[in-house]
Image 1: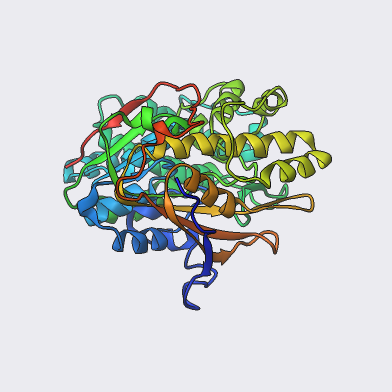
Image 2: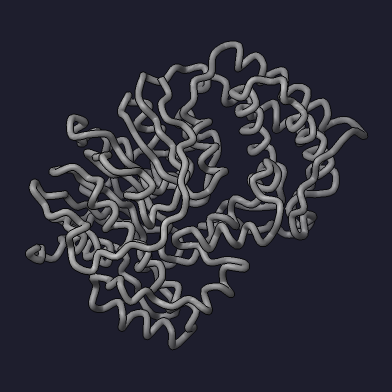
Length: 446
């Protein structure tokens, strides 16, 4: 195809749009089910809603290939828009399903009774406990809080007679209690531990958190969502076309992939995943982080040292080779990380091009990065990758200044699949990586 013009960069139009909270997770905290559980970081439901307002739903359903906490899926469900989302992390698959499920009165009543039993167990002086093997767990919780959480979790794990929807609500309350009683802070881009002695949580604090957070969720749980098709697929979005399957076409893509900043989502999610049984071994966490796009933490770091680029995949950004070389001067591992990240995203874009209907638009919220003194213009690289995959009309919009380094911003990268565009599978050098298995965990929710 003919090379598109260089994508133009625009700033959000108004002062309201560029405010510090409009396009951040803070807009999600009091917004119906969006506030049930926070993932650090998360992108704003305000932005997602604005993008959905401009989508032509007659072209097909919405796709979110990087589900996260299900922000796009839930925003679509609130509007009655069909949506499919893909996620590699089994905990996040469960969370997306729980946030968009229907909860009838019986489920809410059963959940309240279960949470009450969990709170009573938390306050008891003894009883059966479940405590996961988290490395240095005492950094996360005080001994009394661990006891309360362990007894509450044991009650939930023994509640096989309770309906699944009710258990989901109880597990969400447990997740909230885990963080509210932990010695951690979410005041920065990623989680950090508080200083010893800065906080002390008791078993009663666990019980109070369980009941209070449940009460805060009930109103949203009882509100019925419009009828729509909500599909959650567990799989690897490097080969998103293979995960979704042949024949599917989407009118729009609204997503925010992991940023190219080496931040690990698995690291942030450990407390939920261990206590709820999605993780049990440290090596499993490292393996899942290696499979993810963007995270390199724990055992995944050593695997990155032996990684080699796929010669069949060429990244459509000439300056990237020079950027990687400069980053590698400071730390070769980081250079490999950046190269691997955009190799993965190149494979993803090629698969994506097979799924977007003619005239369909993609909307990607991304952030630039800085390694040592080397700027990584992720927004420009994404635009080039989309162009090479067959998309056109690429545009970059600066959304906001992020709260970390002064040079870091969040951008919206948009592109359109032209009518009659050449299929991605026929574009030279359209190699894709090895596929991992996928399975649908929720096909249609009325």
